[in-house]
Length: 65
Image (cartoon, rainbow, N blue to C red; front, side, top):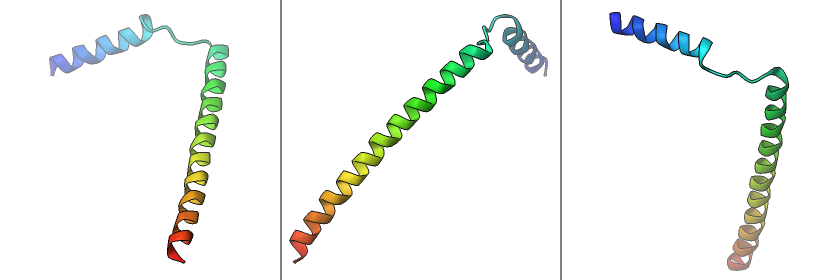
């Protein structure tokens, strides 16, 4: 149990004294960047899905008739 207590104390000490936390402005900027990147990736995946659905539908119609 002593090892667990030492681990928790060292982790707490590291989080308070050694970690550099971002400022509120930095946090807002990086959040906006992440949201923009998420939007772009979502748009690309949506586009790929839309194109592949239309191509496969066309192929199935040509082969089915």
